[in-house]
Length: 89
Image (cartoon, rainbow, N blue to C red; front, side):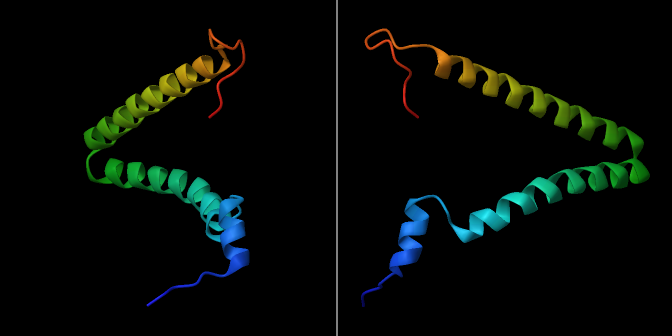
């Protein structure tokens, strides 16, 4: 059994223009913070200490993400020793 893909779809995926990604990204960017807020609110209703622990965990994960992002950006901006140009990727 051979599967043939649609040439336009293959081209779109190679070019990074997948329709699913264009729809999924905005949905995730909106639904994730809304879900976090609703989860914290529900945790506060059930047990306030649990909500504080959840918020602390979110803070720690956020700080770890920010530090990782900062290091990645700083290392990306550093020129390589051999070529004097930025690294790709």
